[in-house]
Image (cartoon, rainbow, N blue to C red; front, side):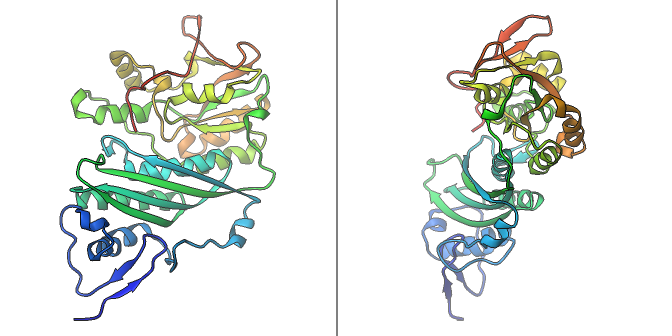
Length: 362
């Protein structure tokens, strides 16, 4: 029998090369996380070939060439997030694309150019190898589309019942170009509030995918990367005040976070907020407000009023911003609060929700 070769792999721990190759089987078992041969086969036959697009470092950490980063900017952006969602696959995406796009978007909202990702998998015993393969391929596709490399990671297997199938943790590194400054301290009275597209699609899609509700909502999640869109906006509007992707808690929560403890308030207009009719209809049936539904590919930006036309034109020229529009403005009324001018001409405050958000998406 040919000898076994063991090497140290910075991405997923020790890896092993062995011949002949044995099939992985149908499901994950505890030995796939034990550090033995089964774990090495899982790494070499499935995880590494799927996720890694370049050479893998030997060592306990991935190395990054500093010169490459300096050429693009003068600061690093670093973020981390964990992903758990039911169901793992939903219309328009899955937990894999969600993890990559979510981390890419967190970097992009800080004005950074996304460059590198790490990925840690926590897999429940009994999880389908076929399902894992599909999710990993989804991650790789999303990473390729975002032009970002997955360079480090880890795999753990937990006992049956200790996890909801699969949890994914990612960390991302991006480069912020010099002189690019974003922050709520730059917000001024009269600035306008822009949303990049329809709101609530992700929350509605996940809600519809849960069998217990038996609710048909013909809409896909908006799960997508936003870094190209943010670069398009910043190229024509370098004085953009701040950007945020409206994930958990939706547009309402993001706007409240942006204006909290400020001497200004934000007023949005109900007639300007882009909501698909099917999403609005589902919200009416279930007693939900689309302003609080999660998005995974929709951003909010606050920009100077004089930049509105060129900013919207630049965003609408991108696939992720075709439906971008102005939804409100920064005012000196109700400092630190968000108000909604309703279709009937009334006004009400939009607060951050307390307690559990429905639908719970993670």
